[in-house]
Length: 430
Ligand code: GLC
Picture 1 (cartoon, rainbow, N blue to C red):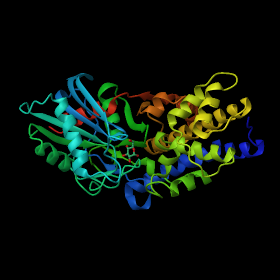
Picture 2 (cartoon, helix red, strand yellow):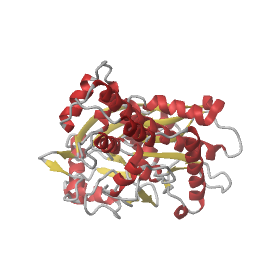
Picture 3 (cartoon, rainbow, N blue to C red):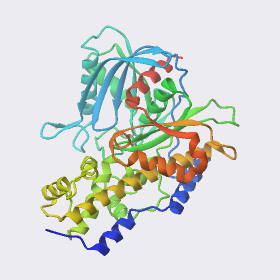
Picture 4 (cartoon, rainbow, N blue to C red):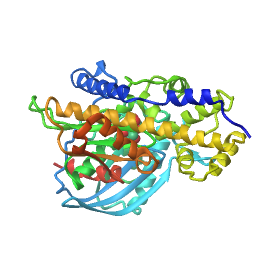
């Protein structure tokens, strides 16, 4: 039975802790970056990408196809918008982009043609092979894309460890259109591309209203908001900040080391500290030090962390079992409790950092005035399912906003990525 070195454990825990003062500084840095970015995007770590769409009215109607692409699973939905904030999912199909030993459309060995061919096949399934009825398709493409209008979105750079060749720098809807044409599916017309954060905001705008910030807290992490362009006379437009790239943070040595060995070193620094794709690996790095095996990789995932945190047994039975299976080490009850503390600290840090970016955005939105009463729409597995995530967002909101925190709540916008794409397709017809 193994125990941890107490001093080392405390040291590591401290490295994953962000106190109130530091958190406030990070929120202020975020606001500053946002403000800079509105004037000169090269001067900040956000991308501030134009979406060419504002908020929906809630009256949008009609049946559309929605392609939801951006994580490990791709989905295609046929959605009927009924107006008045109501909708119905008529059909839904989905497939993973990687099945181990069978296929892999996201690795460096895969090509754009293969990836988009796979998407076209899934679209074919969603229309039941019907090549007659015309459909407009909204495409939620959850990667940083440079847009010139609602249709034209060029992938700037892959994130979330995607590495498919021949997509960076391309207009993604052209790739999709070509793939559809190759399969004879000419009745489906891609008409709008949006980021998943934008989709979530559109979906919340359609169903709930009073929402100006949309965020994804899942495999990846990113936030968009409605920029009022108050003084310029321009129409309000949703800007995709690509806040996962925010870098005025306090990375610890694990973050630094992890960034170096990632697919894109230097990029997506916030995302690598907070999102589901990375949290398990950071946790594993810290655990390896505690186990005296610095540098060893065990393959922990965010789901493992969730299981660890949820283990309510006195002796930490499930934790012991999991650690044994992944690392070969047998931990005593105290060490199991410490493993749980470590996982909790990582989740807490993640939620606090995400909240700091929300608050930075709210501060910018309020200017010198008061906060507007509103919801922040969030979708994603970490927000929805990771224990401690929501609670720590709420705590950090209060910590940073004080009494004004009563003006703001976060709402789960489950499935917003799909619905938002259908709404964007409807809005493209204006
Ligand atoms: C990554 C992508 C971003 C997306 C987020 C959530 O950060 O770069 O575009 O919104 O993941 O899926």
